[in-house]
Amino acid sequence: MRILVTGGAGFIGSNFIHYLFKHYSDLVVVNLDKLTYAGNLANLLDIEKKYKNSKYFFIHGDIANRELVAAILEQYQLEVIVNFAAESHVDRSIFNAYPFVQTNVVGTQNLLECAKKAKIQKFIHISTDEVYGSLGKEGKFSESTPLAPNSPYSASKAGADFLCRSYFKTYGFPVIITRCSNNYGPFQFPEKLIPLTFLRAMKDEPIPVYGQGENVRDWIFVEDHCYGIDLAMQRGKPGAIYNFGGNAEKKNIEVVKAILDFLGKPHSLITFVKDRPGHDFRYAMDFSYAQKELGFSPRISFEKGLEITLKWYQNNLDWISQIQSGEYLTFMETWYGK
Ligand code: NAD
Ligand code: TYD
Image 1 (tube, rainbow, N blue to C red):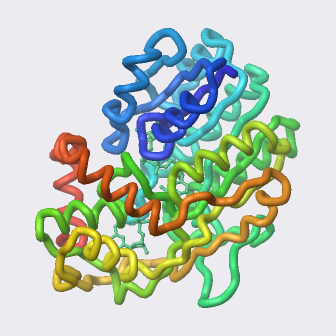
Image 2: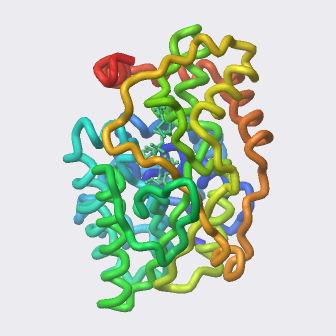
């Protein structure tokens, strides 16, 4: 298998590259990543050490760069593309939507076009449950739920999904879309709820909980997401959409309390702050189609996954301190006064 992974230096992309090398031997992986604030080559040090320039190649670049993408596809004779590259944080998209449209929409269209010309055999586009919008207290998202994105992030992801659909319908190009719920696990950048709570709790700093912490997310351990993507890559039907979820709906306040309890920190660190504008109330995934067609179901419970994740962060404090760069801190300080 010769695979182009885009955004492979980010959270899920780097976990996916680890997953691939753990499960396959006949493999060439090219990782194309722009190394934004969220991209970190330290996520792949072990892979570089073992496979650099033999089975693993890193290219620093932008998925929106036409000449570069075309040249990579030709030079490495790639067969499959898995597109993780994206701006991924809702709060940042509220702050400045431009990079979201540029990478998530323009970048995805460029990849699709270059991939079509290069006759790529399978294009797996990694999307999100957030394209469906928000649920009330009842119900779940299925693949036929109409798209109703509410944040600039989810709107840009929905735009990319529609472009993927159009390349399948118009050109018969073999695109598969996967939509997953909230991931957590090793290597997640500490702007997202779980690593942010861990980091602040370790420093005895207030934990900012939006609104009253009643919003619900369906949490999936990142390795289970990688497993689903692998199934889609091996068995997925061109043109299909597959939902993945963790079967683990939690209120934000429950997640924050669980982390504090694990660390033996007081609940008094919880600070309710101004709500996120347009904050989606609840996400929950019906993944019965992926279960039936691909044999997918999540294998790691939230309790187990959270324990693995928090222990990983505890054992990798140097990874966290290394990414506390200027830009990250500036953004966090201006945002809701965190
Ligand atoms: P992340 O922000 O941790 O990583 C994104 C990676 O993409 C970074 O390495 C970054 O440098 C790279 N990148 C950004 N712009 C690029 C560009 N123009 N060209 C090349 N590389 C670029 O994100 P993540 O959490 O790992 O998410 C990966 C994908 O999964 C995204 O498409 C996201 O929408 C989707 N997703 C994420 C979640 C989640 O809970 N994190 C859930 C469902 C779907
Ligand atoms: P996040 O990790 O940003 O993922 P998403 O917005 O894509 O679901 O946020 C998860 C939930 O946690 C979401 O309901 C917003 C909430 N949240 C807070 O309450 N405080 C925070 O500091 C952050 C980052 C998120």
